Length: 58
Image 1 (cartoon, rainbow, N blue to C red):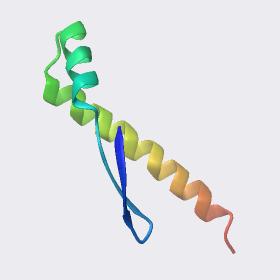
Image 2 (cartoon, rainbow, N blue to C red):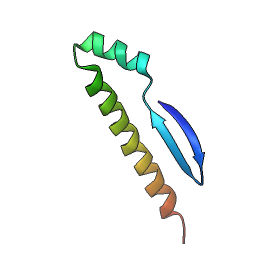
Image 3 (cartoon, rainbow, N blue to C red):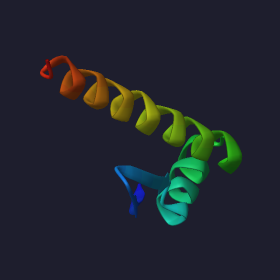
Image 4 (tube, rainbow, N blue to C red):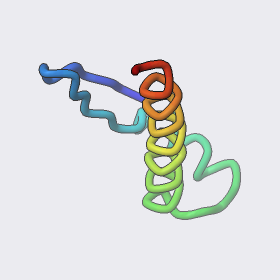
């Protein structure tokens, strides 16, 4: 994933295209599907990290 800090605690993320192309070729699955799944997996992880971080606050 390419992750860019856009300020105020926000980040923008996108999957690495070449890595996704390799996975798509190896698995025979559409590139778009691979990229969507990579983005969804990143968002799930980011959401868990954000929730865990917020738990520590009073």
